[in-house]
Image (cartoon, rainbow, N blue to C red; front, side, top):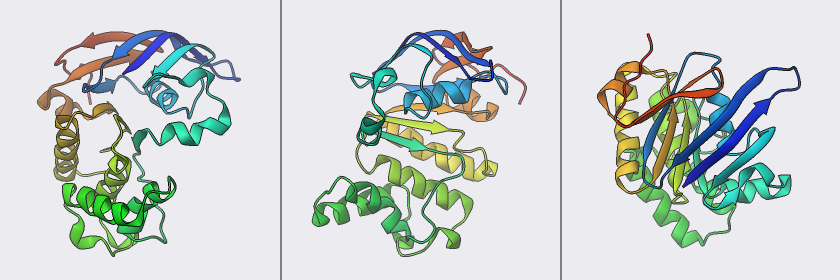
Length: 228
């Protein structure tokens, strides 16, 4: 579960990105975060995984007050989450298998379990046959699938995705969305910032619209609501 209470974020240059957000996202929900460019979506998303810290307010994720988390506790906290980025953030010198396995190696999982679990998630994203390839040998869509596999290999309760289809062509975007739907169907909370009007309007889920750093709209099975 994710809760934000009276959250404000003001940057040192004086820009107020978030202006008093109150929201609750329950375990197992699929939530789109939408809004115009510069509305505060990225800050909203980044505060969940502690890339940004609120100026004031409380953010609770899986029982942890993220706003008060000490810097040395952040890596351990993030192991409870899956985070998927628009630009993949894969390690270029590691194979597909090694990129995914790395997330388990840092928590000192047993080698036998690592091998079994990595192949399970590569099967889910249909990349078992490319386990030995490097990221540079993959298409953009395949790299994003590796990124998703890495994000879920620890079986997180929450996956946070920041524009995960932003750099992909339409057909590939739909393939990626099928994977997110499957992840959500297995009980994982998915929070996704997106500008993709067609996806939001077709694959209906809760929509939180942010404008001027505030929640302008919060609808179950909502529409995108903006010109794409």
